Length: 73
Image 1: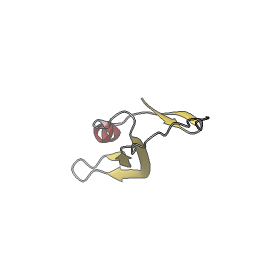
Image 2: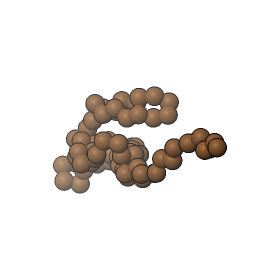
Image 3: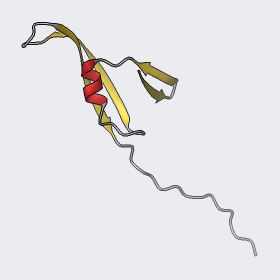
């Protein structure tokens, strides 16, 4: 099971052979988008499987500015 943090809370997704292969090289902290494409048929075996597209990207780093108080004299 894969657990993803979303603005609404944690979402769990059960792995499949296809998802396991597509998610194996992700790094912790990356943004992930999984699109379910429905069932597809393998041309080699003729078996049906659940098909997914997986997108990912590293979250860009941003500089954090400290809110310092204005200097007083």
